[in-house]
Image (tube, rainbow, N blue to C red; front, side):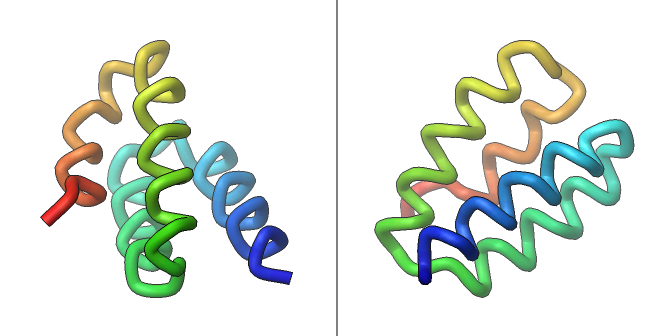
Amino acid sequence: MPRMIYDYTKSILERVSFAPDLFVKELKKAVRNLLPYEMEHLRNWLLHYTKEKPELKHCLVLVEKN
């Protein structure tokens, strides 16, 4: 079941990636809702995903390890 939430979060982020402000909003929701190990997966996915979308690079700060 948790994997479904992670996959849903990724699909939402992909859909709103055309608008950086929406992307940030959805990413903040994801940070609140995902479990720590899911955040690690999301962090890795974002590193790869933002390589092709430099306008979203600033969003990586939201998922940095504390």
